[in-house]
Image 1 (cartoon, rainbow, N blue to C red):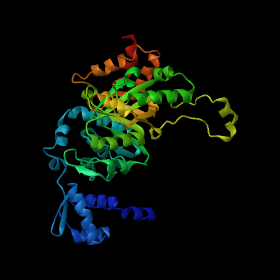
Image 2: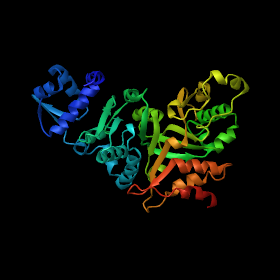
Image 3: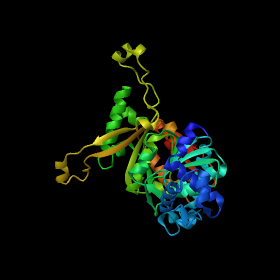
Image 4: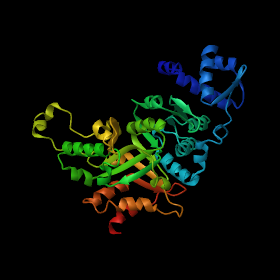
Length: 407
């Protein structure tokens, strides 16, 4: 064991994951004294860790023994999470199959809580892919403990039985400051927005979106209209405020981001989570100003960030007097997360509809972009970033997207 491994083993998170893995693999009751000796920890410290795992619902214990709970299906029966698992199950499996294939040899992956994320986690385990998995999804941790190829890290936070997840600010802080090779986000809903909609006062965070577009335009030395003409706007929505912080942090810190949303979520509603601006300008090197060119030899190349860790956060501070006067858009002091990303780093993975066709709502949303100047560039961004998969995970030929210009 290396010094780093020994140091990691002393942290509560690593000890508890080792306890859970040992309990699941034993298939029955373990004597606590034997477990303490095996893990080389004191009985008092072991009791403290076991109490934490009992509170999460992952193990059960009695006098002198501990055992893993029988499984996620048994633990979460009758909860909101269990009911979500049954909805559109075949479509979720198709999405999971596609994403798991894309994550092969990804290294470290971060997942949120949700039934689609659970399906992705299970498929990763079944494939035997070596993955270091970080998640707030307690059900996923339980299912994956049986797979040696996957190392699980459960985010801290308050446990929500109905969502089968750890939640709150502590969960978000557990993954803050880390860079992940890939992340899987399962929002309540997702939509493709035309530029004027993304910047609308009525669509949160409209003002922040406008500010980000103008900042990118200034940085590249182009007009805001050109940024709009070369950018696809994706709006993600959440249904649970206790998980919103974790989901937004996940999106920010994932170098490759997969947004998993079956076709019915293209119609859904929810509280705004974040706006992704997918622009091919992000990966380009803008022209240098004269003063910058004079210092070329002594400076790093001026390249706009590609990864979402450079997400732009624009604080929308509205006048409280306007709110008092009845301004319906009054959201004082709101942090509006705006993520500028290279289109190649994002995949919105959705499903075919009940007739195994491309969802009509998705076609409608993309067709609305055709009327904009530079629609060819917009649709090319969409072709790169949006994937529709069948129930077996096979992607639909993306030529249907560019074909919308002639429809």
